[in-house]
View: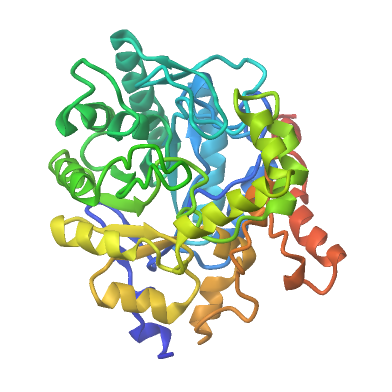
Length: 448
């Protein structure tokens, strides 16, 4: 590989109001590192800083709930009140020490969650049908609830700017609340927020406009969207959901609304065979899925199916069939079409870990940058490895997806023991994020 000065990966990425030093961003990769009440911890700061110091251009935060009713899973840092601002400011200051930008992903789970939480209520949604994977119950949002949620997004965006951070990503993909409005397979409303594509996109567009009114036109704002939903990937009898053509139109509208970038993903639920594309780790799933049994209408059914032969193997087969053979760059065909349709930068996620694949995608006009999740979890120093001339890490991510199914019960980390000399080495890496005092202890001492 050529020197970094001539490699497109290491050329700055220019947005309208933000510049990132290279073309690699960490996606909203996160474990349950914060307090149950939504307050942040030093562990979260350690987690984000470890990627910043390894040369990543920007970090997209863990999904930050804008309201308690919108959490995906407990123990994520919220951004629902002004008293959260000092914590997010601290993260930004630490990350900025390494010339790394910090973008906060604003999220509302809607009906799709991983765990219910202590104060579980039915998930607000475009529909009153439960989510198809775990069976979390849903409540169709009233107009006042829609208007309040739009305001909640705008208020959270203001907090991001007040914290001195670099931008916002609206989480409008992978089955969470905004997807539940965008999707033709999920949204069954009969009012101005349902039916036609324009109506289904109204919620997202009004969120964008409310955020712009709150933070101004000079603050970076991007949207992550599932451009092809494949809603019938796991359940073939379900509707397919939004097509690429429909999503391209949504992206054009977002550009009109002064969004600064599009982040391309795929799938109308999470996890999905095409996101994160990889293996179906049945053994690990059986060992950890018992944690969610009490959370949804279908979780006991799923658990019994996963642990019963041949039902578990059939589920694994359906996952692998729907995934297909391609893993790295699985969403590049979609991002190429989106990039040809809009005049703002396009980022894409999808198992990237090979420098020549990334630079080729950028050079050939399929995207402007890539985001990494599992692959940078496996190799936090991957950007430095590219800079040193490696085309891929010596021990690449195997896409086993064991990290995905272990994070509900255990700290997030790479759980593929074949990548380590011993289990003890694997555990040391997983536990390393807990080194150092707690955030509260540190700031309590400073106050004294």
